Image (cartoon, rainbow, N blue to C red; front, side):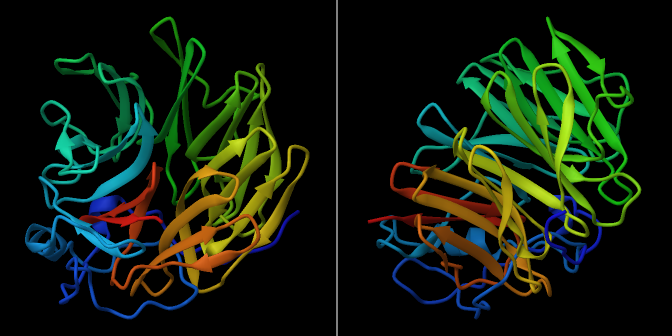
Amino acid sequence: MLGSMTYPGRLPRPAQIALAFVAATTACGTAAVSAPADSGVLADAQETPDASIADAAADASADCPTNTWCPVAVPYSGGFGKVRAATGDLWWTGAAGHPEQTGAVFRWNGGTPVAVGTTVEAWLNDLWVVTEKSITAVGGSRTAAVAQWNGSSWVLDSPASGLGLYAVTMLGADTWAGGGDPQDGTLTLFRSTAGKWLDWSTKPETLPGVVLDFWASSPTALWAVGRVAGHAGRGYIANWDGAKWKPVVDSASDRVSAIWGASASDAWAVGASGVVYHFDGNTWSANRRSDNANLTAIAGSGPNDVWAAGYASDFTSAVVLHWNGQQWTDESPVAASQLRGIGVVGKTVVVVGTGGVLRRNLP
């Protein structure tokens, strides 16, 4: 059993979280609110969203100085969720209206994020991009929602049952969509083969609780993270070996929220209380933690360039951490915010949350 963390409460729907980037007078219009040196991500809503970042971004310079967090103008002021890198761009999910009614997928290639097609009648939490004309997005707050982009329109392809979905991935001919209830850990898990959704929620070889993220390094090395059903805040990391799911990490009181890897022998998972786990190809081990922080997202460009994002446990500030191959450093933006996603493409890091988007150009 690895480590222990304090479970911060129910996983918030993104539109319930306040992401208020407070405008300041800097070269690129970044915010000016102090951020603790060691903070994180994942808890209940405390405020209503603030659209101030959109205003700041509209007035910001088109140029963003190196190693400076700069606001990005966005087409909607709603919340934003997970970020995925694909086709040389960054893609993320978000709200285009009321958080439980209308969602959208956004594509960013360095300019203004562009909504892909029209909106979808469901909040979207995650997506998987095969090509520009083949995207699967999942979400829903109380019932599972799946939307397929065919290059010209979104088509709803939701399972007949299940709670809201938080994660999706494709592995060969299979698509996995997972979610459930983050409050009590109830699992929702579907596997689609040949276009038909099969309910894996109650199979003996299924996952131990709600799914919050997936990551795969090969067709027989798919990983899932989340919270164990019936145990307040207790998290897990599980592996799919091609036939069954097998939990390999029991994180005691720590919910595990996100996972990413540079290779099959170099993967990372993050979660509540700022916990960070590392996988060396054989064993997962606790790498770092912080009781006053929660982490909900992780991504990178390689083994010496890994980024994790989240927010402080008291909801007052954003948290961004960077791994350079030797140690973690605090690279948090000066903003009162709660971050939900992070992505890296080329020499740019992008963080997103309820209310807005920030970018940082790397050297």
